[in-house]
Figure: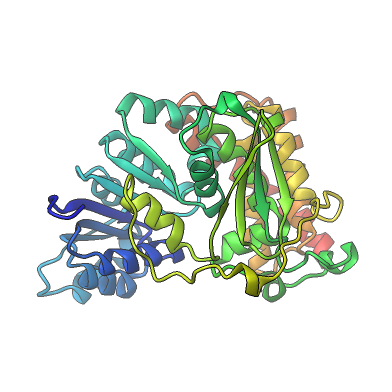
Length: 397
């Protein structure tokens, strides 16, 4: 990249864990990048600090009520500010070379699709785009001629392990899972887990929602759905293996029996740097693997009995249609209720399964044809799942 013009970048979700890891890399390679915009939900103080660190041209909070605080925090800085959902989409649509899409939840759909439509490279950490609206989202990517770069450690590892070869040559893609904090717990103890128990992830430091998804293994199920769309690979060739050391992040088995794997320290700056520098490499401060010190790597099959969320995600992927959209929306409602201590940990997959069955009975089975349809269905399913919360609360108490 030496001697090349600075690449223009935007960071969506700039105050989250992935966003801050991106900010760290942009700071370390400031001579290579010019930051057009940084976007967050409501953390005005955090976003203002990020905007100053990166000398961003614009800072946007999607929560309109946080707008005055952002403007005050950046007064005199020369950084333009705006607020509201529409402002976030407008910032995402600004013409840049590279966008980090790391707004969690279905709220990330509209800004991410705006980034895709402007045709640059999009580093995707917002899994809901592919889970809620996979086929429609990938059509948008193709129409815009955008470059989609996965930054989930597992999908990034698969991309690198694939090495540019055709998916037709792939016999199996395997995602690894740490197993979460409850890997060795008995089912009865898992069902009684509290939020503080579920938030103690053994290897990764992440936001609350994704950490709970890792504890239920729903996160791994959502990643299977993502991989299906990202790599245009059928569900039968996707697999999950539990690997507690989180050293290997993904494996590709080719039809000749050869296996390639993506290994790295459990540091999100590794896959983010791969996407940020693509097609070249950027230096990172991430720890280097010392396999002799690690000593051994272990693997085990996931237990669908103790972790039914993974089974539900597999079934949703196999069912197709609207099942993945329903799964994701119901899971977001369930996780929020668990974090609020309204339902128990074991009620998360039960509420998701109840919602899937209710959606099926109501005929909500057709896959969204557009992003707008996916957003509408997400809203409808959230309402449906929320309506089933009283029953789950009774079970919890």
